[in-house]
Each structure stands twice: as structure tokens, then as C-alpha cells.
Amino acid sequence: MVVKKVYGIGVGPGSKDMITLKAQKILNNTKKLFVPISKHGKTSVAYEIVKEFLNPETEVVELLFPMCKDEILLKKHWDEATEQIINSEGEVSIITIGDVTLYSTLSYVWHRLKDNSIDVEILNGISSPFAAASALNIPLVEGDEKLAILPQGKDLENTLEHFDTVVIMKTNDLEEKLKNCKELTNNKEKYMIGIVNRVTCDNQKIDFGKMDEIDFNLVKEYLSLAIIKKIKE
Image 1 (tube, one colour):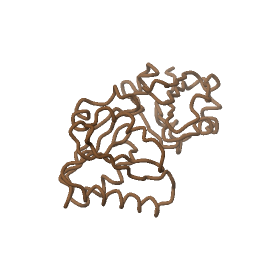
Image 2: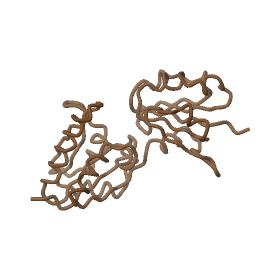
Image 3: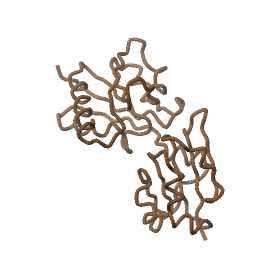
Image 4: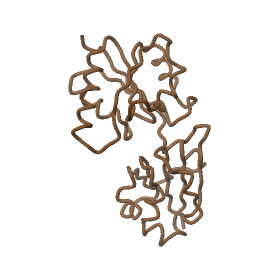
């Protein structure tokens, strides 16, 4: 038995109202849904978004993708997840928060499915950087401005020199990352910073201002990001 087709579904940044109509349709018809979790017993944010769109008869299967840097352990879980999906019957779905194509956990399984000639269809979701810009009521970039997206704020110092807008995501220590950046701390008047926690959710928190005006207590967890914009002269 080999799975007929796999839908990789991005469910958006947090609010169930942001999920696409096509995703709702596929989820309502799916007979088997795979839900990545970071550890046993922990609620999946993506599942909480989609659960009301599911058919009551949908089989929900959790896939353990631990948040760690042990590559051997991670590959073991990715391989096991891929095997579970491939050995399913008919069409199945797997979900991820945000968009499948941007720093998604699903990308590792996606590669393995394609390597096994499995039919995969990706349903895009609204990604958190775009939702965060809307929440802050600012454009990410305009005209010929350049945009960079950095995981964990890597190479922030150098990136600020070459880009007009920089997004930092996938980190729970935004304050440390920004305050350790000499370009930001030494040139506070050159940049505006927007921070967003749990964008589009009922408990969304935002702040926008210069470096010494930001309340970093709002963003002490993983589902936070920063948008740094150079002030136009």
C-alpha cells in the first residue's frame, strides 16, 4: 500500500480566519491528517487552527518532530514520519503553521516524499512576516527596497548594511539578538523596529518604535518576530 497523494497545507499564522478556502475544502474532505508536534503531550498550534474544519471521522495522527539540534535524531524522526505517510491509503494531509515553503518543518518530509516519487500538492498559507507587517500597519518593502528574512537573527549586523527591511523569526530571544547588534544600538535613530507576538491570534501583542522605545517583555517566546526598517532620509 502506497499513499496516492499528499497535501501539504500551510494553515496561516494563528487565526482560523486566515486559513484559505482551498485549505478548508481539502481539510473537510481529508480522511487522514498528520499533525507535527514538538513533544508528546504538547498541543499543536496548527491543529488548534484547523480542528473545526475537519470531518468528525478524520483520523488524526501525530508526528513527533523534536525541536533540537541533534541531526541524527531529527533525521530518524523525519524518516519515520515519511514512512508513516507513504504507507497510508488514499489521499492524506499534513499541516504546518504559516506557509509550507518558508522555514517549515514539513520541508524535510516534503523532500523525502518527492525522492520516493510521491505526488505532493502544496497549499500555501499566509506567512507570519506578511501578517506581522499588516498588524503593524506598515509595508514590508516599497519600490526598489530590499528585504531579508533571517532565522534566529543570524548575521544581523552584516545584513542590516545591505537591506532596507530585515525580518527576524524563529527565535525566543529577540531582545538579546537586537541588543547585541552594534549597528542597532549605536544608530538608534536610523531604524524603526516592530515586534509581534502570536500574530492574528486573540492574544496578539505588538509594539513599534525605535530601539530604546520597545517593550521586549511582549516577545519572550518562540512565536514572535521582529521587523527592522531603515528610516528613509
